[in-house]
Amino acid sequence: MELRRRRFGRAVRLEVAAGASEAVREMLTTELEVSPDGVYQLEAPIGLSGLWAVYALDRPDLHEETWTPMTPPYLATAGNAPTELFAVLRERDVLVHHPYDSFATSVEAFISQAATTPTCSGSSRPSTARRVTARSWPHSSGRRNRASRSLPSSS
Image (cartoon, rainbow, N blue to C red; front, side):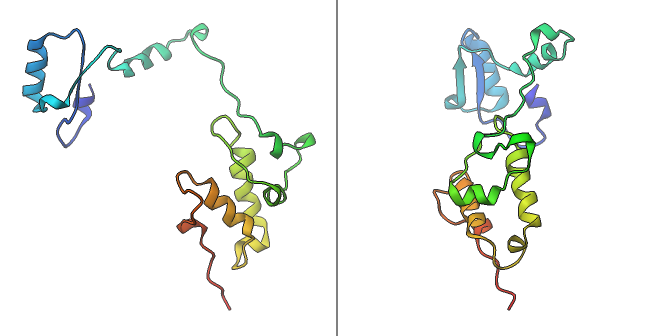
């Protein structure tokens, strides 16, 4: 099925069930022009994308409950009042895990507050905005990346 959807390129890896016969493996390797070191025999089931048909069945007893993201405790406020994210960021670094932590009460709130905070829209962005960008970016190792550079001064 996956090979039918490919529009270009050649196969570089072939996964076959461990119980597949040598004749089937040889035929697939030859027809797909896969090198012998690109053939992997797997004990696990192959092609699990077909299980989406089971998921689509109208059987609520087979479905897990929908996960509702939570607001991290240090971003939560009483009565759903907006959190002053820049105040929180001045006190501590914030790490959120999506989809477990709410995107709306973390990232969307941060962007919304940054857009409406005068010091965030000009050349004198607060240092917390740079710190969050640099430290929360995966694999950045705390280095400043292109998104965390200060804007040039307009004066």
